[in-house]
Image 1 (cartoon, rainbow, N blue to C red):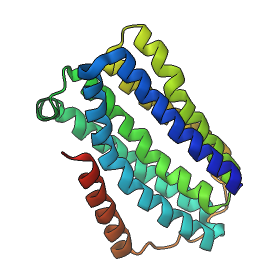
Image 2 (image 1 turned 135 degrees about the vertical axis):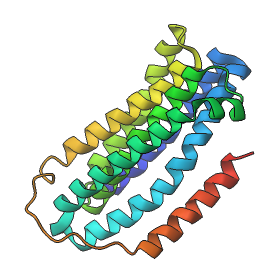
Image 3 (image 1 turned 90 degrees about the vertical axis):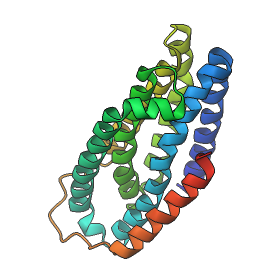
Length: 220
């Protein structure tokens, strides 16, 4: 399982590189600037989510009987949070466009829409990791990662521009959530068991630390 996960991570990173190469090749410096700006904005959300995934995986590993209840609870809450963030982003389309110097509103909308699946995937990834389903987690990583370069080229050839390239990330995120949810199909209906209580201070410190790191590496 560990080997599969390591290989999947390499595929994920390699696919991200190919995605960026395709965007640079077809969009040029101006168009790719829009993509890069929205990806950086998304990273401010995605990097702190990694901390939550780690905490969730640890809690599931320590109390496997509560995996089903915890999965349902986290998925519901992450969906609500994800939808709220997308709605907030859509409400701030104009300020985001102006502050990041994005050419079109559609690019901002496409970039913001990917946040929903990024947030929901966090809980699913954490439960997959905590229940030691590394093969399924690896397949999810690799499949969603490969979807980005495989889909972005047709999108760019069709003339969908930066908005199309960013929309590809939403599709890849939806694929990741779907694959992860399917891999946990026997966990969703698991018998009720008390869900562990998270140390809110620990989670807050990890999120703030990750957000600070993300800000330092993506805000310029």
